Image (cartoon, rainbow, N blue to C red; front, side, top):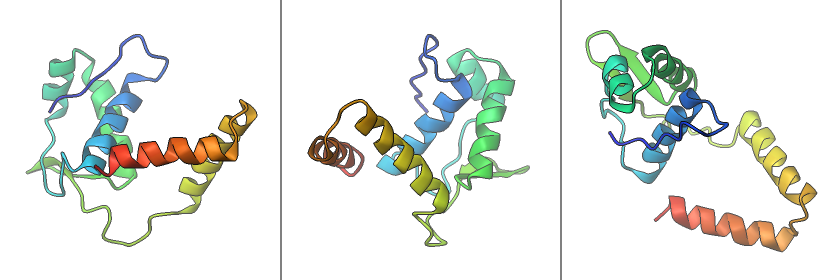
Length: 124
């Protein structure tokens, strides 16, 4: 698995790992049942402490994106099976991002255009 981690970023490395896995699932690069590297293997591959990868995996597990089984390791879960897509947490995060864009001077049309481009990027 190829992850792009920016060691100079303000975003914590565990969050970058989590985000990269979410992006891969959304784009279809990772599908339900696909195995993830072991914590040690991924930590070694990207040059970070295994506790950093462990923290990312724990977050993904808590969010229902992966399942962890002692025999099979970490795998992508079938997270779309319960039908709940837009929960309260999603709405709060989206509202905050939209508020930040508006606060920085973006118009409603600029936000719609920008979001449309991002949607096209994810659903290609």
